[in-house]
Length: 337
Ligand code: NAD
Image (cartoon, rainbow, N blue to C red; front, side):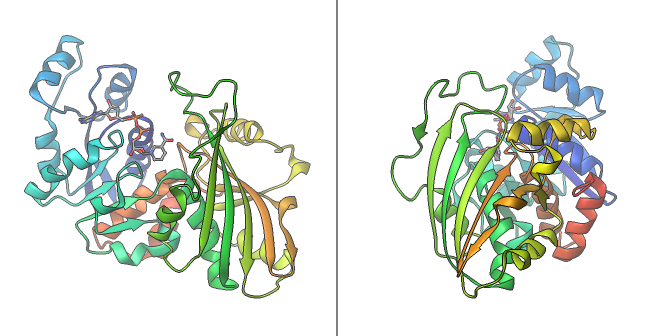
């Protein structure tokens, strides 16, 4: 069993904790967070040991009747591998702690790519992380792009990509984010940071990205034009994407015409937190004109990186190969169902 500590039990950390807890070859040592809020209650309810970032926070938790097993230093020392899902930038502050105890660590996409020897997307470059001491799961948007472009590059060859990312303004609980009545170039400079981020896992792909932020919290939506080496039919591309376990082809006939429909459908199917782990590609949008492929896809920002974190643990532990890990993760979570 790989014993995993979760440092940062928030939006991403709590989802990864549940996913790890469901794996046949992993268990949770404990979780840490800074605030004694409802998520801390949930961690206790789920049976996870709660750790505090420092002794001061430990006192605050105890004052809120939240039993604390120790500080993060203990959590790190007692874990085979740590998932660092603290807010962007805090992972960099934590890095020396993992180095001191030589504990392998998975950082998140909010950290700079230089934080770890590799960046990670299981479909694109799992093997590069095998046996490393640290990796960084790329951001939700980059994960969505890498998962889509890797099979296209493998089967047809990708010459170049032009993608506009229509970004959610914030997660549902982030009431301090926006806009609430605007459409904002974000960033106004081109390319957005997603293009260089994608190159950390798919260095051979020539990609241009532009970001626009809108008043929505549910998902991101990507509008892509991909120049392929050959001239496949739309049906061949559809079959290629349909063969991917973490890509779901959605059809208007099923009434899933919007991001809200996709999330509602996930709730209706009984998925925890209504999570959508897969890229959702609208089948009817797949259009090929010569070498130019166009399509629309949506990614659930809070969920698509979750299976990737699980696979990153197995890669760091040199536990198995990419195909086996992805299958184990998918089966345990119900990805593709
Ligand atoms: P979050 O704010 O929801 O959760 C962070 C958690 O870390 C909170 O529980 C907080 O209490 C805890 N925390 C803060 N400081 C801490 C410290 N010093 N030690 C231990 N715990 C601490 O953040 P999030 O949205 O889960 O983001 C985490 C990382 O994942 C970031 O790098 C982010 O960029 C990345 N990410 C976020 C999303 C998303 O949509 N939210 C998607 C993909 C990647």
